[in-house]
Image (cartoon, rainbow, N blue to C red):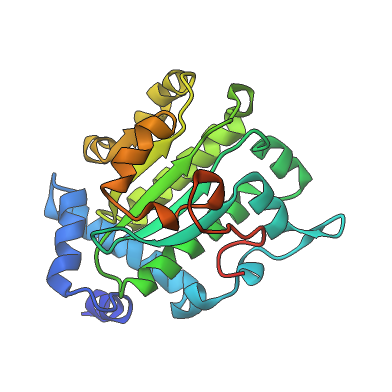
Length: 244
């Protein structure tokens, strides 16, 4: 009864049946494993409170480095946005890893991986609220110009943290993930990164090269005008974070 009361507090517009289906699909080996996962997720949500998603980006990642906010410093390295909806009505989240992306430098400057994970959890919670806690989302990761030398232990740790966060607290939320403008060197790192995913998640990830590869595929899924302007769309990605 206590767990059910917490579930009712946080499930929003998602039916109890749909919520239980998500967790049993994520832990098909046993109902006990699914129950434990659900219990852990509810504890996670209680710790963050109902109002977590309604905080501002600056409240989620406060502080400054030499007069520049930690949030701006993070967004300089990892521009990100919620672009709109795809043709199935799923929210489309966007992250860009570019030639200037160096998380080791970012961490050395004072932005911890814990702060980064908290910010990304806040983004996901905000998207969930916009969805009424129902359905799935689409993710676009633009890695054009990303340099192999920047994919060090800090970057891999960051990717692992985000993957663990998604797996533990957002089961069955990913509809599709498109990795676009992927350089050939990605195959070297993908072997390690994909090993952290379950088979079902790996099947939802599409690795695509340049515009000739990704444009027709994305055009079948969404209006290309919702993409950032450097990809030929009409969206401007803020340097101060989502909602800024």
